[in-house]
Length: 410
Ligand SMILES: Nc1ncnc2c1ncn2[C@@H]1O[C@H](COP(=O)(O)OP(=O)(O)OP(=O)(O)O)[C@@H](O)[C@H]1O
Ligand SMILES: [Mg+2]
Image 1 (tube, helix red, strand yellow):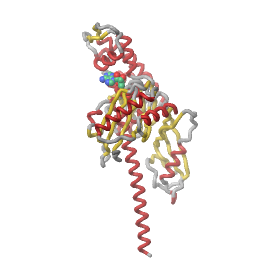
Image 2: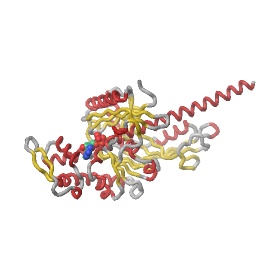
Image 3: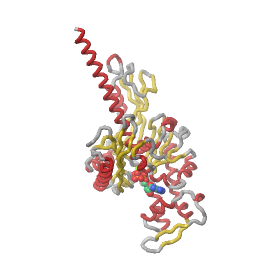
C-alpha cells in the first residue's frame, strides 16, 4: 500500500539507476527504509538514449526497493540531468487581489506564473521556478508572503530549463516502468540537499557531483540555487583513458581505477606496482602505480578547468566562503579533493549524504547523494503540502466557528 508519509527518489544515472524509499517522521526526520540499485546501460552523458533499457532498469531498481521497504511504489521524485540544463534569473510582479489587501495563496501562484514568462525556444521546457525572495510593496527578504498586507507582490526566481526531448524521454522511461512522476528535480539541486549543511547553504557553496558521464554543478547561497550547469564529462572518461593507457579491457580499467586509482603522483610510493591484464591475452604485466596517476591526473585537471570556467561564468567566484563540496561516485578517487583545491583555489571537502536515519548506512556514499537528495526534496514538498492543507483546515475551522456563533446569537 502506498503510504502518505513515504517519499521515493529515483536517480536515473549514466552508470546506475537508484531508487531510495524514505519515511518522513512526525518530527520531519527522514528514515531510509528501502534501496534498489541496478546498472543503467540506457544513458550516455546523463541523457537517455535507450528508453526500453532504461525503463527495465527502473523497474528492477524499484522492485528491489519495494521488496526491502515493504511499500508499494507508484510514484517518485525523479532526477534530471544532462548538458542541456540551463538556469536563468527572472522576476515576476502582480497586484495583490486578496481580501483586505492581504497576500493570498492565489497571489503567490500568479506571481510565480508571471516569473515563468520568459522567451524560450520551442524545444525547451521549464523544470523549476525556484523563488529566492518575495518583495511586498518594496520590502524585500520575505520568504513566505501569505497573510502580509500590501498592494504589490514581486518575486525573484531562479528558473531551470531543460531540452524538451530529454524531458520527454525521461517521462516515457519512467511511465513505461509503471511509475508516475511527482516532480522532476534538477540532479545537482538534489545532491546539494543531501550533502550540504544549513550553514554552507546560507554562506555560499558550490556542489560538484562527479558521476560516470557527467559533472554537475550547483551554486547555493542564502539557502537558494543561484546557478546550475552540467558538463558532459565524468569518471567514465578516466576509465577509458586508463583502458587505452594501460592497454587493458574497460572492465579491468574500471576495477583498477576504483581499487588503485590515485589522482596525484606525489601521493604514490616509487616502488608500488600493480598487475594489469592485457587485452585479449591471459598474461598480466606489472605497471608502476605512479603511471596510473600520470594517466588520471590530466583528465581530472581537465574536469576542474571546466568546473572553474562555470564557476567564473556564474559570477560567484570569490563569493563562496563555503568552498566546494565534491560528491558523486567520481569523488571517491584518492587525492581528488586535494587536486580540486589546487585547481579551483578554494577549500574542498568530500560530501556524503547526511541527516537521515533508519537504514542510512546503506546509502552512506557520495554515489547516493542525488538519490538521497531526491527524498530530501520530496520530504520538503510533503511538508509544504501538509502545511498548506493545515492552513486551509484552520481557516475552514475558523469560518465554521464564526457561523456557529452567528447561529447561536440569533
Ligand atoms: N571508489 C571509487 N574510486 C574511484 N571512482 C569510483 C569509485 N566508486 C565509483 N567510482 C566512479 O564513479 C562513477 C559513478 O558515479 P555515480 O554513481 O555518481 O554516477 P551516475 O550517477 O551513475 O552518473 P551521472 O551522474 O554522470 O549520470 C563511475 O565512473 C565509477 O567508476
Ligand atoms: Mg549522478
